Image (cartoon, rainbow, N blue to C red; front, side):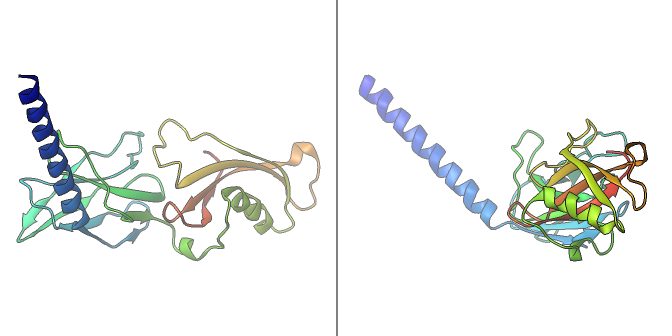
Length: 211
């Protein structure tokens, strides 16, 4: 009896490994196309997914929220031929959003590699790049004519900001405008740096008076 249990356990484990390997293989064949891949704030993008053989497919943008800070819901995609199609709701914040997919409501989501929707102001991708996000904040102060950096520190993301912190970093800076060196004349700004992928350089996303 113990030998039978051992054999049965081995068979179950082998089947599980084969199923897992098959799932990983199928995910490697998934193809995702966003149109357009870069949008301005408030605009939607369409998504087309191929290489998935399932009864249903849902998609969402990881970390994307509405104006109240609620995560945007999953979007059910519709099948046309061998491709799943849909429109992704527009995030309320600029940034870089990984695409997530799932094949059932109770299935574990997965992310196709290097598939992101970028929500940028025009010209964002051409801004100067840096190795460190803190250098982005320092550079922003230098863009203020004759502005002088006084203080800089990281700032935590607010509760309504669910963007991936590996792709977005927030700083608060204090600086003196030209001709106004007094302490009570200093100005402050929140500077958000982003990188276009987990290994990319950092650039300025935006500078705002509120985090």
